[in-house]
Length: 255
Image (cartoon, rainbow, N blue to C red):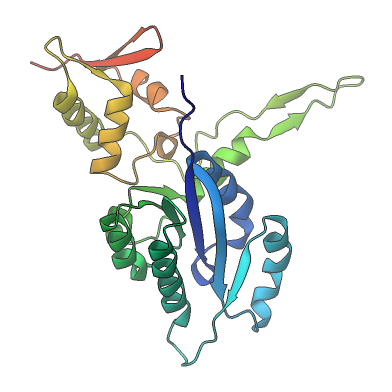
């Protein structure tokens, strides 16, 4: 079986709208989607508040792009990032883009990149406006990946003579996790109906793809589940069956 082709990604980070303390989790998440062949971060690096970025930029080999704030109250960083994105697009050196920002000013950029056949991943905080989220193929909330990484950190077992580690349990009261509400269950049910066969079963992989097309910010981790299959299994309305390596879902309330 041939190995899947890994996407070459251009990672463009808006330093004015990205949390510097989450860079480790952001870069680990990006590695899931492809290889970050271009990594750039935009901001006015002459200002004192940008000094704390230096160690992280060196650790992850991210190239800082200087953009002076020519006018007070205007964000020149956005323009520099958009111009660079279009230059990279026309160079055809990458297969997709990762836009790290919570700023809706990048909505048109994401749309234009997708029109050109690029895969576009957005990463931002939960304050990100819906138009930017909808313009991406997939949008990931930074609060969610940070919470997931924190929960996965091992704790040392302090008993004498013990070197084993244990994983922290999932935080049930984590504010970054949303409940699986009725509208989410209905979204899953309607999406499943679109892909089911004559017996009412649909492939889990196809369901996940369709859910992302309908809701780019749909992610099982938003609801406290590492995988979509675990999330579906937790909902009594759906039946999960596995045949070989393929997982199928059926809506028990479907007519």
